[in-house]
Image (cartoon, rainbow, N blue to C red; front, side, top):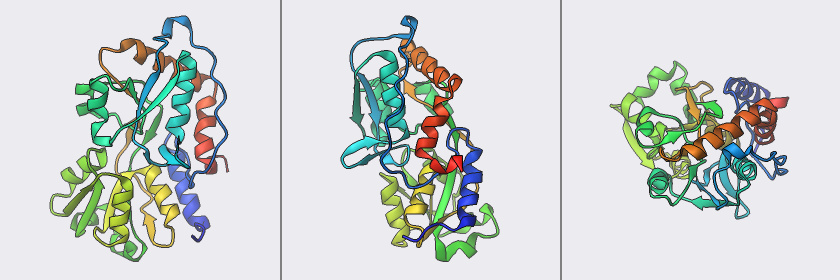
Length: 274
């Protein structure tokens, strides 16, 4: 894999600096564990049972597997939250489409897997305070860059657009590109494979994931360095679990007030400090 050019890195860094918590992106690698969180005040402690965290491990750098170990920004935050609450941590791997059903059935306590806040999701679950701002981004083959240089309005005429089923990207594709041939995938890896195989011409997903994929396949693929949407990332809990929601909000506030949220983000987005 050849390195990104200086211009590409600058564009990526400037974009992600605006995302309030996801300021830059490179292909992530092994990281040091986050600093141990202080104990939560007694008022926000919810239980001594394991904190069952629902994760879909296919969204680097947010949550993914490396050497059969669950890692990523969300993994660090989950470990910190469990420590803050004084509870053991239990990751529960769930297919993306099953995240909310698992939560509602009580098989998980909280979704920490790059979940975007939407009005429809608010009907079914409650959200904790957002910990970051993000958005959707498009990625395409390098040979097709000239086709889209006129701007995003030209994407309406693209022959094939892909997204991951059940995500805000899928909803965006369905609502905005009625004339395009659409394909929906189980994972972002499936979508990127289809893009590389020329089964689709454009893939739309969360900006942090798109930039990691662009860096991984830099010789073949390129992102379009502007956001299609503005979204907020937050954790989902059952609507009746107000105790956990309040506890998670207290943890987020603690991270922000002490500057540790920025430190954790920069661990996964090392270009943000350069």
